Image 1: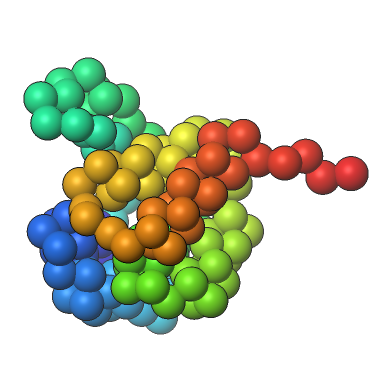
Image 2: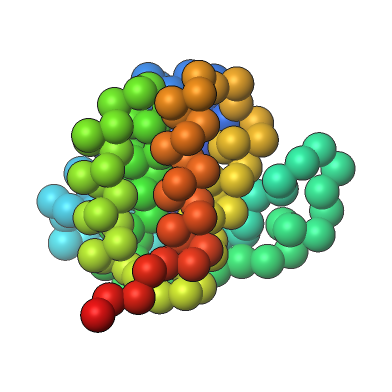
Length: 147
């Protein structure tokens, strides 16, 4: 599952969001349909992405992904980002909220905010896509409190 997610991420950062989407869909399918732990692995240590060329500090940070729910969140957020890059904002928003529901602790929010910042800095996007990513990154960095 982790290999599929990382392949999808590599395709997205290379500008092939359609391929990224296919890999991330496969990862989520494995993480949702299987109960065989061999396909989802044990604990993942997932490094932050560099936010600029030559950034050697950000990648020293990481998040630990322990259970299936957290692993599903990684795949769901990845799919959300793929759909946003493709301009499919309704799907992106739906998946984003699903990711929040699966895993919403501060460590994960900051990790996914970093993923967004890396996407913002590495891909040339239209203003609508840029706006979507900026809004969602800001929410992850300081989510509104529920009253």
